[in-house]
Image 1 (cartoon, rainbow, N blue to C red):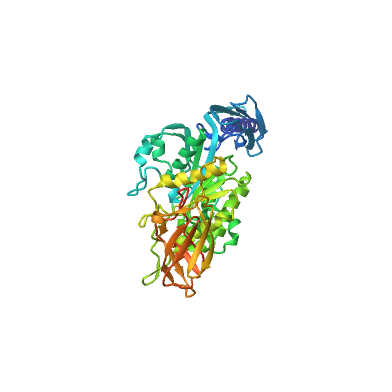
Image 2 (cartoon, rainbow, N blue to C red; image 1 turned 90 degrees about the vertical axis):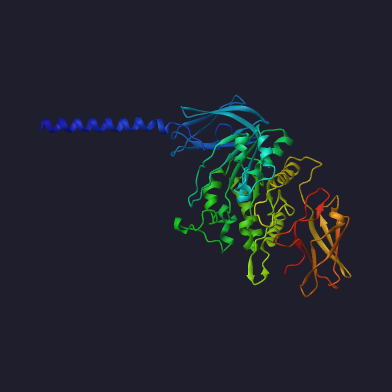
Length: 483
């Protein structure tokens, strides 16, 4: 009995020792502050705001944050799972600074700049890097990459992630703009950021979350998509038919981790994948923008987007008859602009490619987005970002007179006339028309239509826009009918 008792005590001692060792071994892993990858060395934080920071630490321990710009300490307490979040006031643009975060063990972030932070999202025309795609170059990219070194422009690209489960981090890292980093970075986002940084003269950070071919539905939650019965919400991983098109999967994998990061706004280039369901896009895109804003809890932050460029989709439903889907999608994007606050659309009607869905003139796309931001967000007077917009039609005899909004400096076209207008009577048959400009109006007429009732401009899959505002920005394709 005595031997058994001694053996039992020995076993208890050994078990206690093993448990203590397990606790000791696990402590270093727990007692370590961890942050999402976008809170890391080299990042840009939004200036003059309450900037959110979050991460994990030892459960129930106090977490301190010491920003290098104000000599103050901010504290919070990690919850039972080790999660914590707080906000710190940021000064006017400047840096570099350090930030020290500790739960007893310090984590130091270095080379932090305070400035302007933008999220850049969409599908392949946002994702397309400065190096281009195979056999699909970016105009003048070699020279622009060569001259791209700029320590005040910081770049972050999130790795593609598609999942049903909302994620809390992305894979990526911050890089200063150098030829090597810019070469791999989104061309549209780079040209946007380069111009914003140059004109505002403050640090600019760009976070790209984009996936080629992605549908708008993939960037939305199931709740937002309830109004769209055709959007089939996946319930299991087996329901994911496409990693970039299935509803909710990119919201979960790429957007959800970023929600709440304090930033200035969003730029967006997407729509090509939705060209064949344009009838839902105006409502869907409006729901997407409102949904992002609702979850971010940062008010109606700026949301600027590119209208898709013309391209020959070549969809045939009957022999010799083409379905013009992309013109309807452009129309839907134009409608969404007038349903949303604090937004703007960069029209790209003049830079599309008949046989290429990825326009090579990405500098134009990025800079037209920058025009919108510089005028509307940064309040720079003397620069315009909005294209003229169709307002109304008046019929005088055999001539339709089209009036435009946002055309303070009137309209222009080569030789004073556009070659892209068509006109129809009650038979709904459209004929090419003569279209001449009178200040901010366009007169449209065809000898084959004596009693016009409808006019269309550039309403084709592929077309090269030829009507501009006085600011040099192209007019979007449009129609006066709803046939």
